[in-house]
Length: 205
Image (cartoon, rainbow, N blue to C red; front, top):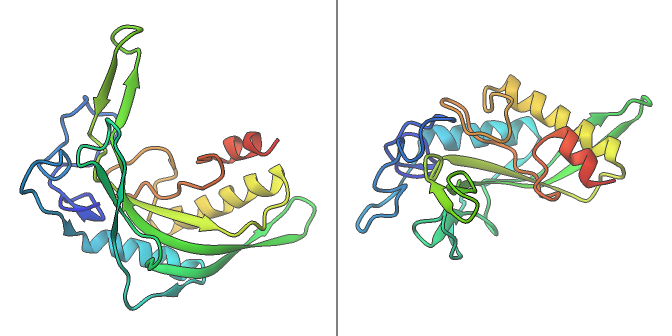
């Protein structure tokens, strides 16, 4: 998110999904001493664009905070995120349903944060785990919705509609699970980590 050309506060690596492990990294991504992040203007603009499209209020002042936890894929020992003062808040998305009705899903907030790396288990041997930091520091927009969804069908339709909005704005390339060059890894939904309509439907059944 942060001092590469790719993060919300960015660092220097090129954010490409599927590259060789640990080949698109930089001092900020790796959490090296003295490496300071700088806010990525383009990432902020994308987040604001998403907020406007979803009818959110855009805060004149927002704040980043450290979410401290220890995990192998987080070299700094904390994640740069937002919580009580997010960039966007109080929006909604009207979701057409198969029966012809429309479900309005409230958007609690849209906040920016940096992605962590990726743990790889069993790729070399069954008792070994590795860490790929290629996506560490990549900008993430997390969209937190209100508890307005009533069924698996509504959850799936909500994600389809949200994905279409984000793609039309050029914020995401349609793959909500991978970070790709030129697009934010945008929607990590807080329903058991559901990032696809199929997974959302399964998580609610």
